[in-house]
Image (cartoon, rainbow, N blue to C red; front, top):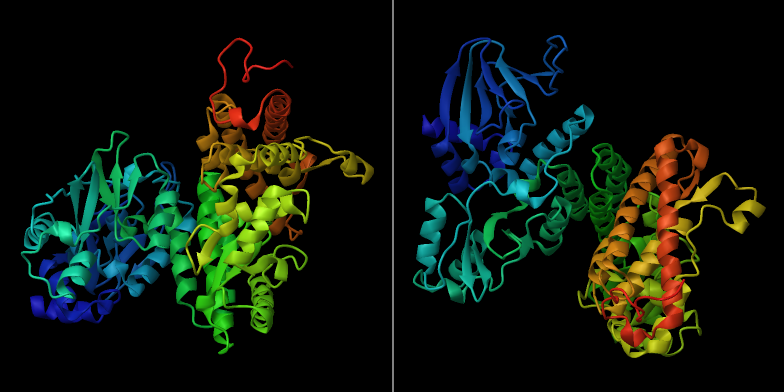
Length: 628
């Protein structure tokens, strides 16, 4: 029976993507079960499934939507037959996401335990099947789940010992049915995975008596419990980690997660789209895939995901589109070499906070050898990239930050020299504007080092005059419900969410984080890093973080509504169109931001930048307690 089952599975996706030995392992773990007619095989709305099912003979009815308690029994959503499989999303996520399956007549099914199928669903064929499941989930409106990494850790950690051999580690992984071993070392954890054993032991021809300490990843990637799933998923995807270890606040190991653990989560849809973009071989294919980005964003918002997680997932796809288009455009120019280019994202994309209305601001760092005519040839190619980005539905401002302009494409030495000049004289050569843009720079292609401008401005605390000027300039963007310009332009009933609310928070967060020498990029991470400093009290940091989150949620909803109405997507909203609760939230948020801005303006008058790293004074009259 095993042979026939193996041959059958080897012809079905996703098992047909496995090498023969792996497929044989799946067949060996499988069992064939005969079910009478009208038998419920699975109800994964009530309890997460333990087995994946493949139809060998007969037919099975599937219900992919869970009826309400008062709904009549609906007809099946789908009838499947020979070769079809079901139960994969519930099995892989270990959550109750459906379906319910009932045999239509006598049926023979292959049942495969979860531990035997994970490898198959890491293949491209498996990803496509799960993508289809995720699309169906979007149509069903499945409620949000799996918000933090804690919910993905479902088994005890696999812990080894630094003195164990490679053979010992492999045996332990086999016994526990897992593909990793965490090795405690100096208060942290090393990591051994299947990939480590393949690449660092087998491929290198090392004996199985080699100590794991000689081949393991010395410091395994780690996150703390409570980390949003979107943040963890982004790290897994961007860094290409096999596993991320999960520890509690005390540093105790709680378990590990891998990319497969996320495939049935809402952010997983973004990673699937991202991977499709990364594999695209034609520009038109990237453009077509990019058409799904607004749908992805709409899905995440509809599921009431945190705005920070939503924009991070959306940002991951935008990153992928830019990287792939850059590669494909440069491939059309044999005289240009992609290895000479580092592509930097700027602004909201760099901070992983873009929305549908966000511009694509970017810059390039050239290899030192790229000068003169060669640099001009690259800039012409970058203009082509901008054309393709617009075709993909993204916004590129010809007069904004684009590497097609010489001002935004320089060598690292040239960027460093410019940054030093801006640091010395921020009022010259648009120094403040350029510094604000470039400090947020994040490389997504090429040299992964910290951008030169951010590197230089990390020392801005050693230039107190510039530091004070930059903070003062950030306060010029006032949080207010109506500006004089709005009134004069006849826009009294409108509100610019970005200019008059979100931008002030972003500016405060950027300079407060620099004041305490924190390297974070995202607004909420910067606020957390500066929390408790003289510039930003713990209370104000928490308030601004909350305000930023709720305003981003309103912004996302409003832009999606504009798109649905066929309007131009902007940050300008008609207040009367906002639900009453949103109007109240916006008004209160502006008041909260304005309060922090007034305190900062007051602090600039009564303190020196040298004091700003210190915590605020508690009571009395010191640098942290000023009049007004």
